[in-house]
Length: 246
Length: 251
Image (cartoon, rainbow over all chains, first blue to last red; front, side, top):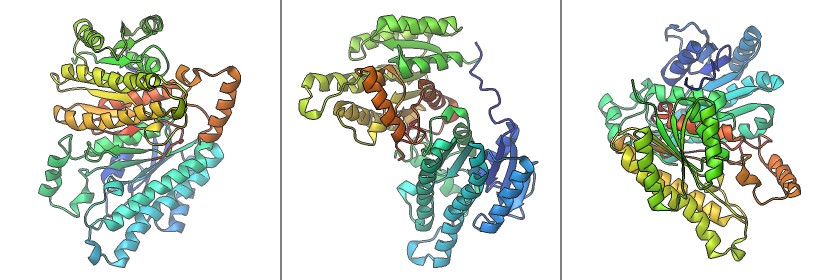
C-alpha cells in the first residue's frame, strides 16, 4: 500500500520568504521552489548571489515603504500571495550593560517591526481571497533567555505576541498564523557570535545530542504551511532537540 | 529495504485514535489497535483492512498491566518490532470537584495516566532495542488552561504532558522521541458523550463562539499532526506539546 500522499500541496502556491538569501530562509525558499511554489525573496543583502531562480527584492524589512512596494509588486505580478515566511533577523550579541541603544533599537526594528510590516503588507493581499498561511520565526531564546541576548530575546518574544494576536484577528478568515522557535541551528547567524567549536559544542547539552539542522526547520515550516496542520493557528512549534521543554 | 513501521495505538476504536490508525495505515504502517471496546475495535480494524491496510486488534483495558504486556508481546510476535506508539486511551465525566467521588477521580486518572505509563513503559522496553522510534501521547489544551467540572480530566492531561517531558529526556539518548498532542475541541464521541441533543446544540454554539477558527476540529486534523510527530520529518522535535485547537489556546 502506498504512502499517504497529499499530492504536491505547495504546487503553484505564491510564497514570499524574508531573509531568503541565507540560512533558514534560503533553504525554505529553495525547498518551496522544488515543491513547485512560485517564490519571491526579500533580503537586505545586496551581495548574496542570486543562485535560486526566484524573484528577488533587496529590501530592509523595517522600511515600511519598501516592504509595501515589494508586496504590491509581487501580488500584481503573481495575482495573489498565499504564503508568507518571515525569517529576516539580526543577532549582534552584546552583554546587556554594553548594549548600545542603537543596537537594541535596530534589533527590535528588524526582528519585530519587520515581521509586523511584512504581515500587514501580505494580509492586504491574503484577506480578499480568504486564504493565507503565515509563519514567523521566533527563537528558543524567547522563552529560555540567554546571556548577551536581551535585545534578541525581547524581539523574538515580541514575535510570539505579534503572531498570536494576528492569529486571533484572522482565524475566521481562512488565514493561519504560526511560529517556529528553533534552538541553536547550523546556519551563518550563530557564527557571528561564536566559534565553530562553541557552536558544535552546544550539542553536548542538547537531549537529542546535536544542534539543529537547517532542514529540521524547513520540514517544520512545510508542515505548518500545508494542510496537515489545518487546525493549528497561533501555535509555536519548538524545534530544539529537547533543549527547552516549554 | 526498511521493514514497515509498526505502530501501537491505544483508544483506537473511535474518535482521534481511530482516525490516526486509519491515517497511519494509509501511509503504510502496520497498526496494532488497542481499546477496551472489543466490538468497535474490530470494526475499526476491518475498515482499515478493507481499505488495504494492515491492522490487528487487541481488546485491552490499559489499566490492566498484564494485559498491556501480553498485547505488546503479541504485537512484536505478530507484526514485528514496535517503532511507534500513540498512547491515546482516555475517558471523561462531568462533575464539579465538590461532588466528585474518589471512584470517578481514580477511573479517569488511572485510564489516562497510569494506562499511558503502562503502555509507554512496556512498549519502550521493546523499542530501545532498536534505538529507533517515536511516541505521541494525547494530552489536551487543558494541560495548559483550567476547566470547570472536569478536574480529573484536566489533572490527567497535565500529568500526561509532564510524563511526555520526562520520557523525552530519558529516551533521547536512545534516539527515541516523545511528544504530546494537545487537541482543542474535536468532534468525537467523547466530546458528545453524556449530552442530550439540545445540550449538544447549546455546547456547539458556545464552542463555535470560543474557538477563533469558528468550528470544531475533525479527528483527521489531529491524526495528521500525530503522523507528523511520529515521522522523521519531526526528527529534531521532542518533549513538545503541539496543539491542534483552532486557536483556542495559544501558549
